[in-house]
Length: 288
Image (cartoon, rainbow, N blue to C red):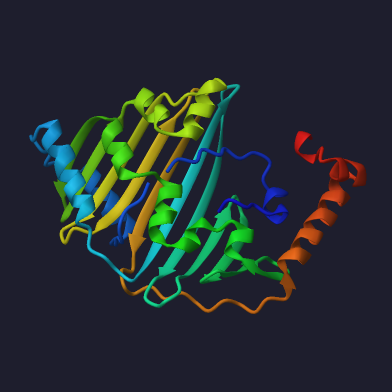
């Protein structure tokens, strides 16, 4: 989600924003423990690096389609400063239903104890807080995931072809009915592939290490996607588990009690209460 409202911002003082891009077809997963357990098994492939890259590419291209899906995304940012580690964790449960003429989605987010939810039906959207339920459009709320699973994955993880082009090495392991491809990326190539990463590098925070893992089950469906980026003073980890293939049900949108415009007014009023009228009017809140 591009737009973070004041109800969310006021509860979190530090956020690491590292947005890279990845798209795939429709995927499914068993339990999270099963998806990640295969990474601990033996059965490492002796194929050449080129053969493994080609095999992974074909596996991604041939992922079976589905009409509905649930994605559980866990994001953890760890900051290192003065010998102390600070973790910021966000868990989001996305549901997609692409069976009709309009895409329906929902997402429930828990970020360091702050909970919120969005529901969409086509271009219509509602934002559920612990108070009002605001109605607006997906564009107003900046809900890229409302465009469907593939756009969501592109914004969350990145594009598979980018990972394949930036791979310095790849390892294949098999076990418990799963096939796991683990890629170690070339940091320089990966930085050059993404504008956000180039900007971070320009201002002294280049990616030092980068890893991506794809997990497949026996019928060719993706079971998990993981990404880890290591910087000098922080580490960001994404763990995605895909489940309930063609069995996901998106609940109807809750009835709204307020409009998007009223939400903006509510946000401005809350900012004024905290920072003062003059700072909000002059746009100096961000500098505080």
